[in-house]
Image 1 (cartoon, rainbow over the protein chains, first blue to last red):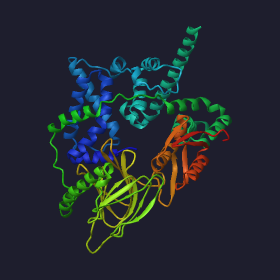
Image 2 (spheres, one colour):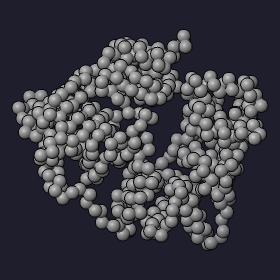
Image 3 (cartoon, rainbow over the protein chains, first blue to last red):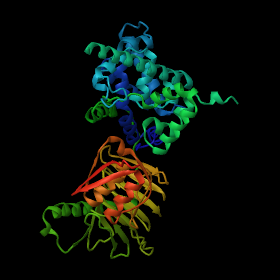
Image 4 (cartoon, rainbow over the protein chains, first blue to last red):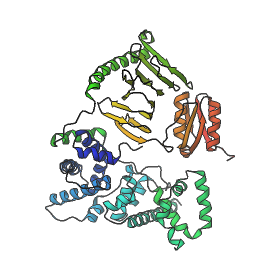
Length: 192
Length: 337
């Protein structure tokens, strides 16, 4: 069961009391931390950036207009901030988001649950198959199944329309299915 | 309208019954969609794609630990300018509350000792305790009636029968005393419920406390001083794990077991939730032959005062076989269904 609804959290957060701030922090710090780590590959930069992100969010709370989805809003603004920070660290050489995801965004076998529909694959094989997907496909898979985000929030975070989110998801999964079938055939051939 | 365009990915992905089929959850939905696919073979590819979108990939989330989050929070808090937290408690009750809190703490202390050393149970404390499967109706000295579910207990000081401690699950119908406006309190491990005349339900099992308000108005006060007001028809849960309160409107969809009157009423609740109620009221342990069985939905009333009848009703409702061996209930699929 969902604890406080986002509306309630946001309401208390905007009031500026410590209770509201803590609620928002405790709910979203863990999720954003994982996301930041995936993008930056650096715990130090992620933590530093994330803490500053919350501070700035708090300070600008009165200026913020209506927010449709709190989760999507936090993911988008944190991502932007983190990418800016990463650019700064590299002497302001512009970094493309796609490039970032391509190089940093990987899944390890520990992150893959054994209880899978594609059962004949071991977790490390499935992880490496997911890592072979395109940056957009990886991110959409991550937001959907790792962060448990709904498709309209994903559309907002990835700046694409709802239908393209669904299409990207579908393509990613059918590619995974094909890759895993190939893998299965290979492993059968090996045994013989 | 072109009928074929209607059956796109979005159509299937956002259909609740289709989701059940994809996850193999509901018998009716499975039968319906199997049949639908046979009659609509042209859509098989979209159906397959929609199924894999719904099932997706299971990840183990590698989130930072609670300690890490709290550490980060402690670092951030001093850097922001917080508004002072207004006290939400009325001044009049505040003084009463603090003295009562001490009283409550004292009672709690006595009773923690009581559970281990029964000889400490002196004349100043009244205790009512139920065994597994037993439900009792009580009348408190002030006229309040209590229905105490199985494996639960309440206790109170003789000179303060409107300050009740509860472990387990109970339903309260509080007698209001308009002349003195006397309040009524229920204290659980997690929180304090402050009441005028009203009817409500408190459940402290499963690592959390649920309070459902049927009538009137009540205040809940958490150990940390957080106060929340409830409106009728609302369920407030306090989770021991996250130490947070949630408000939820109770409607027919809410998995809120109405056990009083000797019946559990369920509305599409997964079998494991239902069995959890049995485990706690009868002191049993449940084993499932397959994981899928845990999520079979149950709707309707299940009598709970006789274990045998109860089990038979659950078997019927879910199409399972439940075998009782001592304190263990083993659930498996029924080959006849």
